[in-house]
Length: 156
Length: 117
Image (cartoon, rainbow over all chains, first blue to last red; front, side):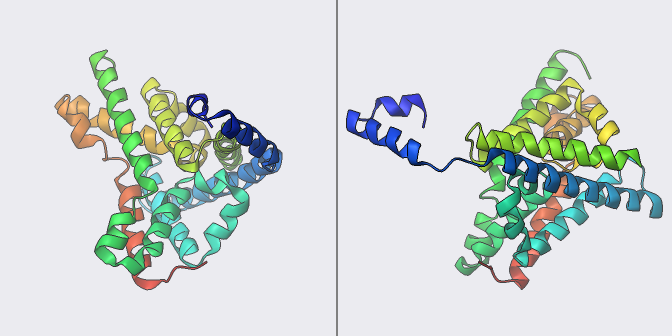
């Protein structure tokens, strides 16, 4: 809870907030970090294997082999989401499954599946980017500002 | 073979940063992802992301930070050829594969599968 929000509360409410904070279960930070490291690292290692597979077996350069590799990772992640495996893993791995591009695909696929009952246009189409949207919005805005600054400074 | 080791370690460490933002910084997952994407865009603008991905391969290109970097890279590539408008036309150039694949596969999965608890 931010300090600004805290000021608006009455003393009794503040007291309750402090009480609730004491009762909040401690997050097992170390355990979470270790899980995130190994699961995230494994997904990236797997991505490297796919990338090298495309590099060696097809006509890709080191720069372009990333694209099919990412597409394959996304396909696998969507399948894992559809079978309910990805979210099961995500319960332990936290950021380890959320930070790789597979987590981006997972958030799109799970939103699409979840809202399917509301119809394809309003449900699937409208909610697909519910979670992933903020990543795209902030990524694009940040990239626009960064690119604009670089151009204005004359650097390329 | 070394690239596999560094892909694992660097990819793992980026996820650890994300986990710390969530656990210690108390950010929601959406805030964490957004922060990492912005960080990737800034690092890309500074020119520091490319050396990292040369060094760590998929360890740098698979985490969501590379999405921010790739947006900047696409925008700059196009802007060098067509000027400032190139930022708008080129921004999705590099990331197209990731976004299209996620939309298409996500939609197809909603046609075929039912949600699971």
